[in-house]
Amino acid sequence: MKTNSLMWFRTDLRLTDNAALCAAVAAARSQGGQVHALFCVTPAQWELHDMAAIQLDFIERHVNLLARSLAALGIPLHVLHLADFAALPQAISDLCRQLQIGALFAHAEPEINEIVRDNKVASALQRDGVSFELFAGHCLQPPGAVLNQSGQMFRVFTPFARVWRRQLLALPCLPLAVPEPVGAALPDPAPVSFNDTRTNVIPQSSALWQAGEGHARRLLMTFVDSELANYHEQRDFPAMEGTSALSPYLAIGVLSPRQCLAAVLLRYPEALMEGGGWASRGAYIWLTELCWRDFYRHLLVAFPTLCKGQNFNSLADAIVWRNDQQEFQRWCEGATGYPIVDAAMRQLNQTGWMHNRLRMIVASFLTKHLLIDWRWGERYFRRQLIDGDLAANNGGWQWSAGTGCDAQPYFRIFNPISQSEKFDPEGKFIRKWLPQLSQVATLALHRADIHGADLFASGPDYPRPVVEHRAARERALIALGVMKRASASTITPAARRAG
Image (tube, rainbow, N blue to C red; front, side, top):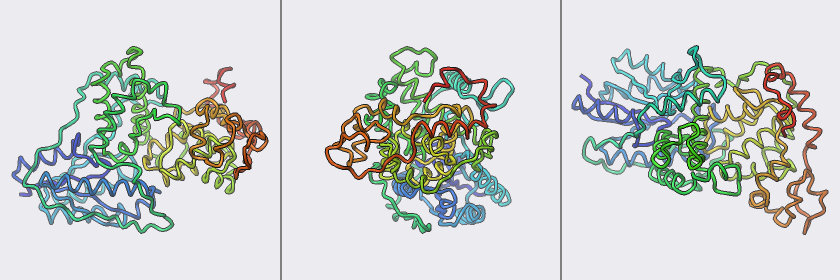
């Protein structure tokens, strides 16, 4: 009888609130067996998924920390170096036979390739009499749990959020503790190196982001205690530290969404309630962001073609994108001539992260001002982001382009000038990331053509605008108008004036 259990870590690189790990420990204890852990290195799959080098570096650092933490619990971490998901079923079956594993435990993931992977692994293990149990941990509510009255996935966010909140109010919210040691502490494990040999990928250090499960929890608690009360007032200003900056840790599962919810409710117990009071306003808005995270993940499971780059709104298939390669390159490099757009892209390229308000601005600029396919931008983001996450990235890009589920209307086109004036009024963010504009008067920073402002202390090395706003807006309205049949019911005079 096989009494040992195996915990397969993927995007859940933590010991706290890890249901799969707790189940693996419980199973081994009930059988008098041992617990083993597994992580799989699959460079060809990472290349296929355009995973950012900075995110892989961040993951590698956390895998090494995880290996040491597991060793303290008496659990060895085994690392399999394989090409891609296709090699996993046989390799994991072989490992289970070698270690006398009777049961494999892991957290489910919402992406289609990952679902197919798990199904193939389960079939291979079934032939050997090894069970494979998946747990829901990447969302606060598992996909398929939040449905409309017809039993279908919501296509509009607001009613989804209403049901999501009501269901969470009825559930306990207590993160799972770290399991007790299952044996004597093991020697410090050898360092884990991914040896990323992908072609055309330049390694990028994630050192700007401190690693560690403990650090992520401290960030969470500091945010809840010090920043959350004002979140609704500060979150849209990139020059301020008004956001949680937890997305890199959530993306790879160093922190769970349930830990986030529990921390908020401990301080703001009414944060899930509609009209919970002004004191809980910031907490309510931040939990809404976690709800959007669940919403996009639920959509991936309900509509798996989203994983394959398809428009959610099929009317968008008729859009004729310009896809000018030179203009796309200027956008990638932060050389569009619009300071707020360029500063945001410089932040992304140098740190692997971008403020959420800026993500909307640059995505709208690419898809509507330049009429470049949202998939180009989504892929570029995947290759740069330390918090890369297919569901959020796809959902955000399709929302901005107007092609997605409950997206902004096609006729809503962010004006980068007014966005700059409103959300970086003193130009602090722009000057930080575009030092060549440090001596430019604030008024000029918010112009479409700062060269024409004649307000420079010295001539800067800065490009002229790639496109003129009004002309680009009119062009976009025509090109994206193929979707107006889907948007007609939502058009209001005020909405037409947006942007």
